[in-house]
Length: 216
Image 1 (cartoon, rainbow, N blue to C red):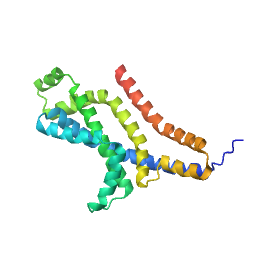
Image 2: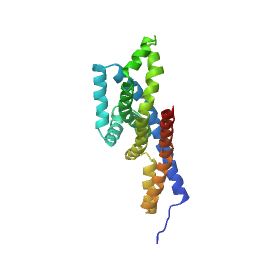
Image 3: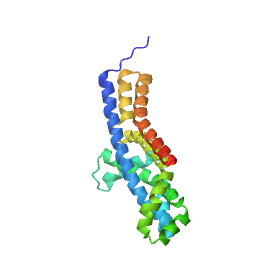
């Protein structure tokens, strides 16, 4: 007979791990978006060797598996004299990894704005900054939002890799509960439900914005 031994305390422990996952995701998405916005605008509006050099550096972060990046940074931080907690390292690596992808989302979205539209704005006497903030970014936001939503959800799931440097987030807390209860299917089912509850509102919010902009 199936004997569920998962207690309320186990579930609360997993929810605490989910809170760590949310914090990691928040800082990773925030840092990755800010850096990605700046890098993406640079790559889209300043062609030449600076854009190529930045693209080459970001290609490294997109090409090397995230787990390897997390382990390497965690190993080299003490060697370099950096007194960083495992949580801080996780946030930095996830944010940098997210920025590498967000840069290309921003770059592609900005380049998707029709050039005649930008020329018309400049012919009306708008400055480069006015054109960027009033014309380019609002239009680029509509193009790039689906990709950004996918990136945010991906970072939330990728945050599980920080368990390798000792952070007890949702997946690691689930493993601990499984070790105690020997109920992997039940515990992983609960963990999957928690991931769904976290990610579903984000996906629905993105879809709502898309529909609203499409109807305008």
